[in-house]
Image (cartoon, rainbow, N blue to C red):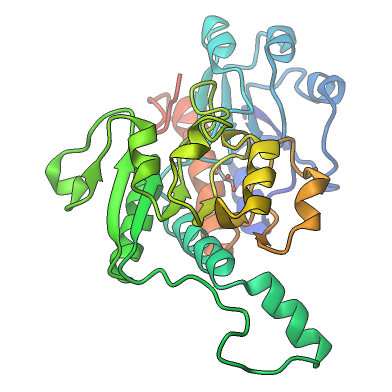
Length: 318
Ligand code: DGY
């Protein structure tokens, strides 16, 4: 049997399956492994099943034993892995697209609604039992009929658009490439990201994390949004320059922000916590049991195809 290192704890449905088809080193304590520990446990392994918060840097990949031929990431994003170094070393990297699309799109809508309808302030007030309904109490922004900008119109962005059509929103998007009309489904393409921002009363960030998308919302680009924009980020924290965002949330340029992801998570820029116009979740985009089981199965399928069935894994990214 081929040997696999699993760097974090899998759901039992997935750990049972992987244990039946591989000789596995599971991490049932779920402690985040240090690079040194990964190298130690990867000894003699043929593959690694890893997770989005485990960084497989250039240095670490260069030191991996030659026996490791595949890294299967339990996530659609793979910014945690130096895929170019892996490719140069002859290591295939795979991800888990498709299966988390709906769950993550749901969270994007939750972030937009939670931010725009002031859910954080509402929860705090309801807990005090010391509030009074009035015509102007905790007034939020309504999504119905507004312009929604989608930054990154891949599978998740398109699933957000599908949901937003239910709110009668006008969909605008920016993507590296314009989509075919059938995928566009009436959404308006902006070749320039600033043009998208100018047309976004609400913005949903659904692009991959990469050098190209890092700090896309910065001191200059934020000026393009209409005053009082609502922004939701279910992609990667690095897309937003936090100090710029905090300033814009204080001066009203940004009405409210919904975040599921953070730069250097789980840490958060503490200045955010002084703000009321913020709706926060702890990276729950794909956190439903059916989605997590499907992600595990997809990650296992990729290992099984490559190492056992000797066929190309479905989700190779490098
Ligand atoms: C992903 O798949 O990239 C998600 O962020 C994990 O929840």
